Image 1 (cartoon, helix red, strand yellow):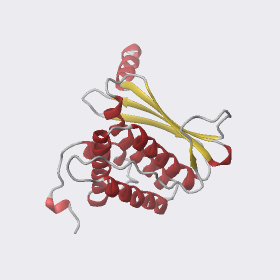
Image 2: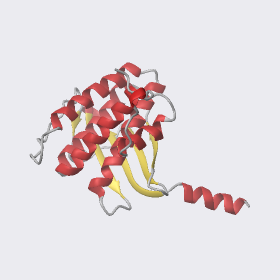
Image 3: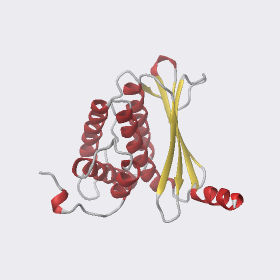
Image 4: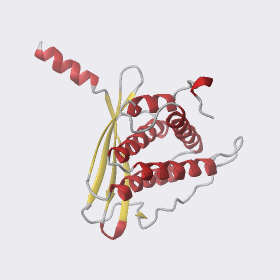
Length: 210
């Protein structure tokens, strides 16, 4: 029986698709990276990864009683999405995001990182996803939003127009979910929010707050 339970646990972990790291260095340098382990389409697989990570970071901020910081991050990401929304097939502008005191590095500095956030990205049976997240402690109101924004800048630098459009749509739907159904500090938001954001379900009229 124990062997069967262990086998089931291993199966339930899902397909390990990618490892995400954001390393912070001295002098406020920051280097984001995504290492793909098993993906036939890393560009489009980046969309659910970034949506799940966004939900995770908002949840972590809320758990740390940094709800106002989480809301400010949402407002900023929404502004970025609005600037990236262009009609038809017009090419997207490659924005350079303001990162405050942090400095984005396209290559890893030749020095040990002083702080790291890391997430393991899995795809489960049935098409759902899961994220295992861990990171350093201290000044999360700066480093957690900074980690996500540097990864977002990485996506703007590296992804094609269509994956970025899909990411903008997913982030917009996640905001819609949080505002009109439940907030990001509920534990269920870590799965239900991204599932809504990446799907095609519509909110019922009675669920929408005017």
